[in-house]
Image 1 (cartoon, rainbow, N blue to C red):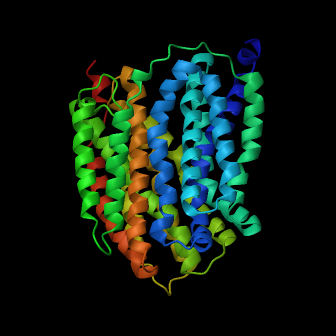
Image 2 (tube, rainbow, N blue to C red):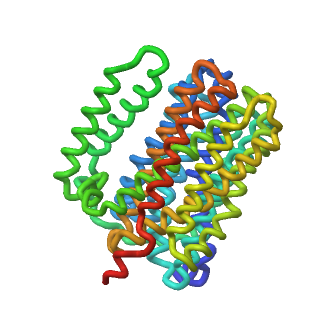
Image 3 (tube, one colour):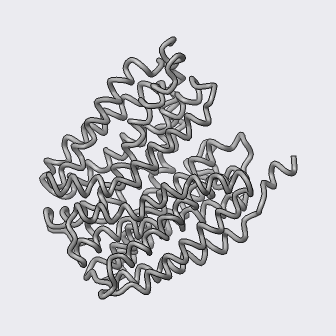
Length: 451
């Protein structure tokens, strides 16, 4: 225990190396979609399930793993999560078919979803001084790995093909697992209460989301009305069931009581629909329409990711000085502007113009990520921070899932600039909603000012 107290930043490094695996693996796949389409003879709609399955499993896995961490001990769950990711990363390169690869992606998501809640639990329990700085450092691990995932993936695929995006996990896994054995404290084990996990709620949620994805993907050809019925029935059953639970998967009653928090969740989900449409759509467009290699595509994607990393500290300073609303409006306006500019991009447009558009969209993400989170915390009580954070992540996952479905619908039959414009038009509607919600949300912390 003495080691952990004397070396808090070594503990943060150990956890950071593990927690970066989820965002890194969620983003590296964007550059690999074209190669995977060729390898397994997939349509883009088929390949988009590699995105959806990861976020579906993450959405279900994080809240469950958070409770299991309390029951079995954070260190034990953290190391088990690393082993799950290792197992999935070993099996994926040898996938005999596409369903097997989807299973590996789901296992990878569940394993990496274990690392964040168990890691946060350790930090909150064992780092009492400068805890905020420690949490901010862990945030850098996750945001940076997500931002630069396409670039890393592009270089790896160019050198060693798509299996390399799974094998690259091992240096992080081995180092984090080795450090975890000696650095992470052996936390006390809680009481095993299986009833605390809302399994039926998760199944109903997953059923509704799968129904929605299948329905959206079928809109171009023969509409799957049965999938729409599955979505409606699953959603209705989910709402009815969750309202009766003491520890629901999603606290729907809390959402109804706090409208401002609900608006933040809707806004953040919409932001992620738009952002991930570009984050996953641009690499495929650059490779299949503009003819760039995976390596060059990864470099170009640095424009989108890099500007988000650069503008995040600026947004943080604005929040400290003026509150959350100003950067929230700036981020929403930049996203609307970037989407509008994308409609001016055509086949004859130079790559530099696309990179200018991507830089505007990247800047918007730097503002949006931090300002939506601080706006959420401005509008919930301190004791609700944990559940609010969970719903915040669920909003992110739902946005990413919807974006992959929209891309599958738009890019499935034929991919060209006209279809990219179609995606931009759909995103433009979401952007208008995002701007309106940014204007509508309160300019100051009403909860705290009223106390």
